[in-house]
Image: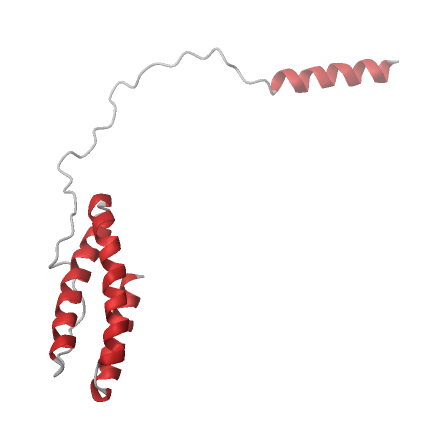
Length: 129
């Protein structure tokens, strides 16, 4: 019987000592920390996000496409870096159009320029991802 009483007393001490105290009074901080208001928000521009050097082609249609695609990709990367949802919604369908045009143009381009053109398209795909 003594063992049971000692066990219950010990158990009640353990449970009451581990009790969280909910009635603590919280006082506001006397000197709250001040956030740095001179922080500059970094917005990326086309100069910050550049596509690597673009090749030139003798095939005029391919050369024109590469320049247009390079300009578009620069704008797309700026919008992605700035997390501009509105611009990305506008540029998303255009990205698909450029990719389709690139595939179609790769079929028509002369063989001596086809490898360089395909390398350019692959490089752009890697930069987008």
